[in-house]
Image (cartoon, rainbow, N blue to C red):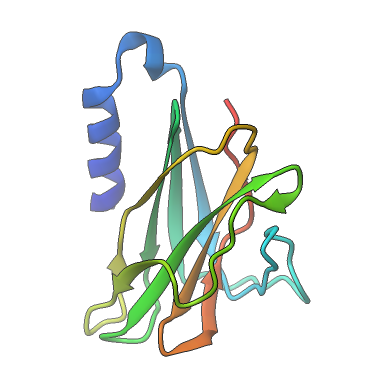
Length: 147
């Protein structure tokens, strides 16, 4: 996937030998599992996948690259990267607030979302909601971000 390769190249080019060991990369799937702000599934876990998300932590930066492969064509989605600390969301902005991901005519799109790691955060997850209908969504499970 081009976004992932670009992100890895950027991290490799900017990371020193000392910080290279501190890069943590997680890959996870986008499903239609409903989650609360802490990333806990609400109802049944959904199995079909609609894309992937790469979550990368490098020192104090957290970067997520969601790649939506089965979205609605030519549609704007809101992407929220939500950090978890002590089992709760550090911040959980409501839909449709977030970075915009726009799909092409085949329903494929990606975006890069970056934020500073909150001190003590141990995990993060991604929510992707259609901007015009927040009940049309995709989420990831919580992935560990601690080094």
